Image (cartoon, rainbow, N blue to C red):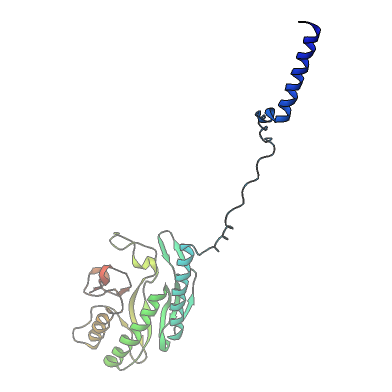
Length: 249
């Protein structure tokens, strides 16, 4: 090929290249992918679709609720003692091993000034039941049999941390839930001790009547004739049993 031919061929190649650029043939060539985002700049998280609800206010725990209910029950009992005219001291809860009283009072007198001798520690409901027994049963029966009013209720045992005499379980005395009545003093006659009384005597009639009439008020009533352990006192307690079962002997 001569020199003239080489020049002509070069001119043709330049013209072809120019036409390709003008027609955008190279514009269809794939472009290089963009680099991934830098690891030190994480994508901004999407905002929550809904605002978070505020946490509800704290509620009472079951224990706190129970304590509150207990305080209300105990307070109501103390109010009733005051309205009945009883003299007593509110005492802090008792806890002595397995023995305890949740709502103790030291009772010193009942309605109408009937003295508790000695002043005795017991659960509030027991004090309330004693007041009811004295006003509804003992005082009217003393007037009927002796024509006089009781002035003193003689207590042998109220709260005492011990088992039952047979050792089977905890005594109601260990819960402040029972009292042992040893006898009475009166305004116009000699004292009366709980014991086996002469049959058909005013003392026997009085003792029998107040023992039987204690049964609707207390859950357990034991006295002379029930067993050897209760020949010299009346045991009265508020022990709860299934089906509201009561022992009255």
